[in-house]
Image (tube, rainbow, N blue to C red; front, side):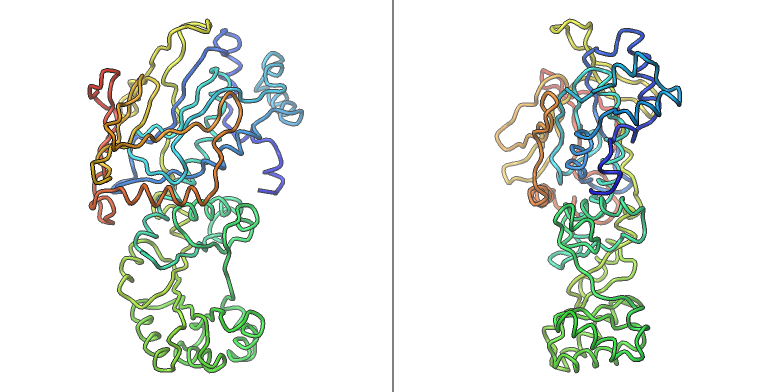
Length: 450
């Protein structure tokens, strides 16, 4: 992004305890201890059958800009968060470790190791908040968007939620929705920053501004052409449709309906358009849509949807509840020191220790059957399976950037692998089960629920 926030360092988009841990680890001599952190979700939102990974590209950008410069260090000193020793350590700091993660657009399930961070304790622990902030929100939006595009089938969806959330979160939401199959966004910054197709025509205020609906429609048509989309429910829908067809001699691009019983109204409008000879005029519907309403509209003569509030708020699950936990560290500071698996035992918050390796198990038909996670060693591939972790950062260098088109393609591929029950909107268990395997290939007990 190009505002003052994107140009600045991302280092203070963090929680204070990350910096106080660095300060204390420097004092105890453990700051440089090799460590492995893991970002994952213990469970999916209630009733959901899969989640979608999004925000990978944004996270890589944030890591690249994660640095402590004079402005940040001065503030931390004044706030007494750091001392001189910590300031010296942070001056000129850059992440020098390595990161693996699920590709953007990939599906995830309970316990999926979405991000693996390997480096010193100090340099890895400070990434906790920035990574969780991006992954939790972007993945929540993408997960909702995937369900919506699934229900929309081949009808395009337009992201229209900018007015419902923080102005910069709106840009992230547009990007996440695009990853999960939305065709375009109304957000112009998303178009500039990420090359996402944009769309938009006029609101009710434009019609109300003019002395008549005809005057407003004519001004829009003169400006945007006959292929424009006219908003037809400011006054009387039937009159507005007739007027739009008349002014374009039957060549009107589309009409938009933003209120009422959308299913019934769309049928009436389609019949009227066909009666008037405007067979090619499309019908776009908006009005607080979510995946359930899109499913209900599947049999209606609708050609596209505009979705806002439900999308950008995760359709009832505004966060994925992902966490970032230390799962292993070296026994000493020696380069060849053995790695020790560590795990929390807390009730309802237990973790699985050890470095993870993830595989999507598939049958001979290419259908996903399980999420296999090797603990301490990779999982054996029986020939049909798919490795999920790809390297994103190598020794501090970003190596995992890819285009949004690549992420969109990955999402469609991964979603197509789901078993039939996995794409149902009804409440259910995760589409596939997650299994942890020890280095000998034996299934281990899991601390995470479905």
